[in-house]
Image (cartoon, rainbow, N blue to C red):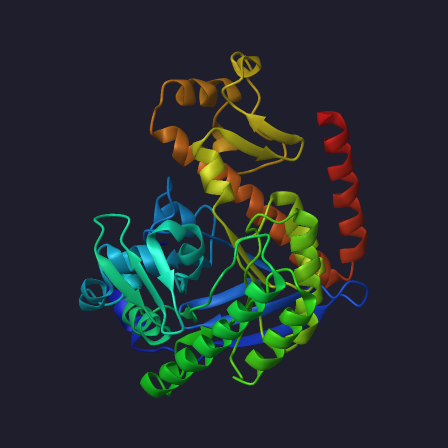
Length: 395
């Protein structure tokens, strides 16, 4: 049952320090299963976090996200919420949990990825990032300290330190300068976080950068470990590099991070990549892909992707996925979903998003159960074989 606003307020008065409990580690691959204890509930890991950029996961009601799908944590975006409606109005409302009526955990990013993606609107210096709003052109300055202040106003369970994310490819010298800047920002931001929030009830994660250079990644991870943070992120992935290189950097970086802290690979991945990141010791992932693809009519199934607008589904009475038990697959045919998409009916985005997120969550549940049962290597082999078969069919 969805929590009331009164219940949300009670929870906010009883916050606890974030804690990570490692339950099992695969001796063959290093895949991990754990429990992330937050002020707004326990998050089972490995976990995929839906992206709620504007304080909402597009296309789906919070009621269904917490109920039907049982999502334990979602991600929101500091850059976008800072610009609209602003961190101060959200704080006056009682924080982001109350503002969006979400009773479970929230992670907010720092805005670093927008520094990368909105490169025509910003200027980076050692002080921070001077940028112009994509909404009205107003100038703003993000600093390591101001991004912490904004996230403290949100009341995020997990905040991210400001980092610089380079596009791929980058020269070694550009990556070295950027990595050192990220380290300076991390030290300044974390010091500000400790000064403003000494009880550490809200957690703060630094982000490992270094582009695609292993020595820079190792150096950055080693320096950030000195902060003794409760968790660490691997950033700078999915910025134009080949997918294999993303996995290589995650695999290389993870062992340099504390074994007793959660490891978060930012902005990944495709459904077939989830198991690969988990196999490399990653505990947390996020990506807009399942909800964005859903809205655009691309559905993920155990038999491969379905592009629902195709004429072949016009009279198809089957569910999207025979093995899926989500509301969409239990209730509606491919033909009906195609009709909704072709007619531009708003409900299509909701039904499609429910399915795509359910598909992702089902993968994560299977991975976690296999790690706990000691059968993860066998499951990984099965998933890789199935993906190879799908790729051969598509060719």
